[in-house]
Length: 367
Length: 268
Image 1 (cartoon, each protein chain N blue to C red):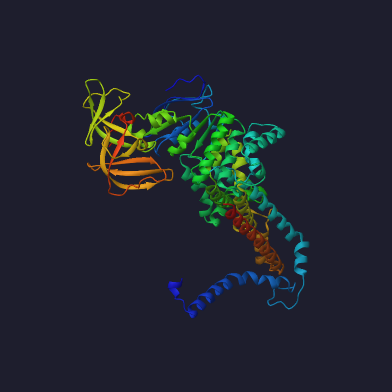
Image 2: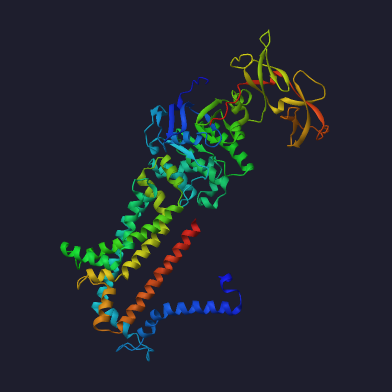
């Protein structure tokens, strides 16, 4: 992807993991820059946890090389990789107080008692939990426990902090607070973080870069912006954000302009990033927020009728059934006095042709 | 139960009285020694017709009784310690590793539970007579370690199954060595299960009679063996006092085990 001037903290070179006949991870090349916040995003079974465990050294790669902080760590045991990790279930030591939990990695590093006291105090300050230092983890709420487990990582300044769905056990509101807290700590301390999640919102909120995984491969990687606005595959488009996908075949005009011939009509579209041939099958992506309800026909619009209309607070989402049976989603800002859309009402779903994006068709499911 | 016996008052009364009869059947023969122990110092007599602590005085002052008591306590302590040192790391290794032949090893550790004690006693007797271990404290402790190992293993393995492996993983990621993880992360969480296992082992060794009868002589005789031979040869009522003391000690240890088990569950 984009060349980074910052040196790499983690570098995976052709790393693969096989269990017998099953390929949990195909050859993956991935580089994480110092101070970067990278998210591994993907459905379960996409290989993101395998990748994390490989970096942590809990499993050994079948092939390839892992370099951490300039050092070949492929065969280095877990406890000598200099990493930190935050687990979904916190993994705090139940028999230790909060203070002792955070002091543990410093004890391992044989720091003096005074220095341990100072550093633990600073870490607790950072997460604003100084007042619970002498309690046991089970006396704290889930959110507090997860902040303690973060402090336990931050306190010894590891090369890289791995986070395995760290917010999965928290409720929605707390999750959003913690997302911002983790982002703040990342910005303040400049720690390199590798975050694993299956939650696209979390990935979009937090990451410098998202690595989207699918079936043991990297499907696409880039900034949240890139992944949202310039998905390269149908999988990427569907996994991040919601999307309207209209299948058809490519038409190229005499002036070289692209259009897609579909069951709903022929629509102009910007040229795809990778050149396509006329007659080739393709899919037109239009994000729901780039579609609007229109009365009159425009060059890019489809007639249909409203099947349902739901209110999501700041936005309204209309589901429009098209003549060929397919369905489109339209998302509009919610404004006071907005004319109601009634079920069954005949409407047109319209969009600006330049907001469309041509993608190669999804590969037929294997098997 | 309810479906089986119906819910009529008569049926419930019957069930309750049967339960009490069973308790009585189990308990009365043991409890009968208590009044006897405070009674006639000349001969065993029930119901006792006097109250005196003479039998207890005899027990604590007679070096033959008191000596075998100290020997029993010593053997029980050494057995408990040695079994802990052996069984706790073994249980940890079996629970956490993916050794080939793990199941077989585990079975091997459980074997002493299945071999009839009398067979074990005979086998050890024959073997020890070659090795000169008969009538030694070391020999008896060794035999008791064999008997108590499976119990501590079971207790520790059940404790381990309640402890989260992620804690060991996270400690390793934080840089801790295996040794440190064992002592700082694993052992503290097993405190209660180890204590339960240890009390159990102590109790087993303390009143083990079959193997001890085979292996001990005059130099290393334990209390249960002394009691058994005293029944055979002299039948003194001091036995009642000894039995009462042993019962009380066992009861205290059992209560300790129950309290510990309550604690393990509360901490989960």
